[in-house]
Image (tube, rainbow, N blue to C red; front, side):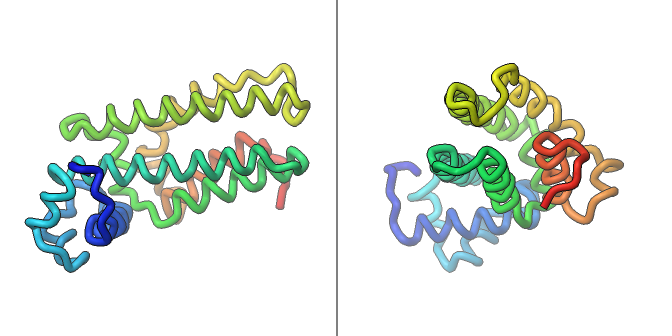
Length: 194
């Protein structure tokens, strides 16, 4: 936010923006609509954020940071590896809940808004944290020693064209179902699991 102002109105705009972006994507949602839904004036909006792109970046950053905190808490718990993976999958599922096809397309393929490069950079930074945690887990014997955590980063970067492919998306009820298919596949393969 412009002045790092975390006022209740700015928080309301963040929450409302997230809900609208998740449901309709970035492009379709206007600043007017966000303000109307949040019951906040446009003047207040522009006190909190430079523009809609700034709002979207703040929302995405907040969600990623909260996810990393939760991920680190799971990795720090003294529980079996299978339970850690199950909780990580659940965390991923909760983080992608209610994401629309429009959101996926707007955030992961739109070069003109600057969101794609922003998302890629933030994803790279968060994956550095994940990779470091996985290395610690390997040292503790929670994950295979021969597993290369960087492999996950590489795969994730190459999943974006698949996640935005309409033919593949049409096989699933929602983008979340497709994202969870990937997460489950890389965690469990095709073996049955709870």
